Structure formats: structure tokens, C-alpha cells
Length: 237
Image (cartoon, rainbow, N blue to C red; front, side, top):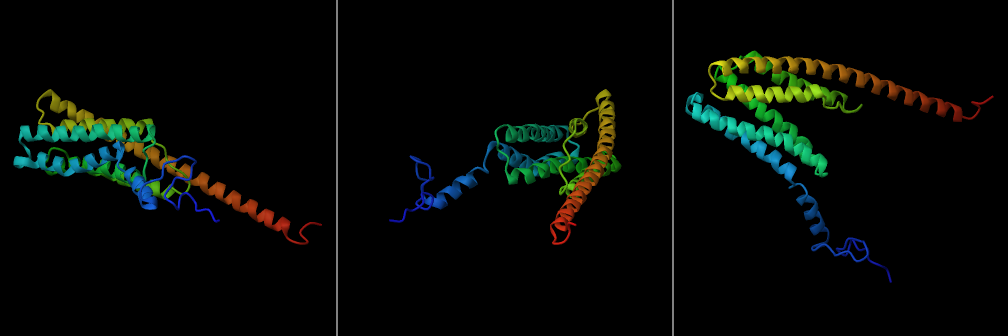
């Protein structure tokens, strides 16, 4: 008698394994449920915070200290979730395709929204917003440019840049006056310098990575060509 595979019968295929209720449909549902892990939930919370943050920051004309304090709280929560979701995903093997796409989008969305709103309110010069967002967009395009040759790893300078940007923007969101208002100017200056310096470093790494990848690909093609020529009849004398 022909045996029916355990997977077709709704089982796991392992001896003594408990069959999945609903067969293949049940297994597919379990696979989809893996998307709803803690790391992805934190990422989705950060995405949902973006419109809420904008409304709080611009409430009552955008200059109400109370509303701006609430906006700062939303921004702080978003930054905190950014610290934890990636760590949780890597530590507990919760990395998903959704997380790979949504996480950087959430990061850039909250930071971009904050910078644009602050510039719109004339609290932050537009050139600062353009430099920071231009750098982020440029690095994203750069990663796609060299993705076939490898991945540019996050550097320590990049992490310092992110911390400086988050701290500076958070200080600008709050309605600060006096020495603290002066301090936030210098914190933002440090963030802008790190933004430019790390951006140039990423460009350098991308150029080197692409050159190495092209050299390796050329070498592989040459080896394959030599092997083909050596295997042709009459090639050896």
C-alpha cells in the first residue's frame, strides 16, 4: 500500500509529532503568526506614533509648551522602541522580511517628520533638515547601489550620529529657553557634523566594496574562461 506523507495528512512528518490542525492551511497560519512578534510590534508602534507626534507638535499653532511636551514624549517613545526592536530581533531570532523593510522606514519617518515640522515652525533652519534628510536618502540609495557586492555595516560613528540626532531633535521639540536653548544649538551642530562625516565614510566604504566586488567577479570570469579553454579538444599540446 502506498504510504501518504505525513505533511500531506496534516502532520509534521516527525515520529510522534502532533499534527497541525487544518493541515497545510494551519501550518501557513502558524508561519504568518510569526510576523506578529515583539520586535515587529515595536516597529509598528513607532510607525503609528508618527502621525500622532506630528499632530501633537503642531497642535495649537505649534508653540504651546504643554502640547510640545506631549510631542516630546511621543518622540522619546519612538526613539526607545528603535533601540529595542532591532536588538530583540537579532537576539531572539525574530528577524522577518517585514521587519527588514519596516524598521528603517519607521526610523526615517519619525526623524523626517520631526525635522520638517521644526523647520516649518522656524525653530530649525531648513538647511539642517535638508543636510540630514539628504544624507539619509543618499545612504539608502548607496546601499542599493552596492547591495550585489555586499552590505555596508553600521559603524560606531553611525550609532553616535543617530544618538546625537535624536538628542538634538528631542531638545528642539521641547520649548526650551535660556542656557538649555543654547545647549541644544551645539548638540545639533555636533549632530550635523557627525551626519556629514559618517556620510562621507559610507561613500568611501561603498566605493571600496564595489571595486572589490567587481575585481572578484572579473577574476571568477577569467577562471571560468581558462577552465573552458583548457577543456576544449586540441587545447593541450
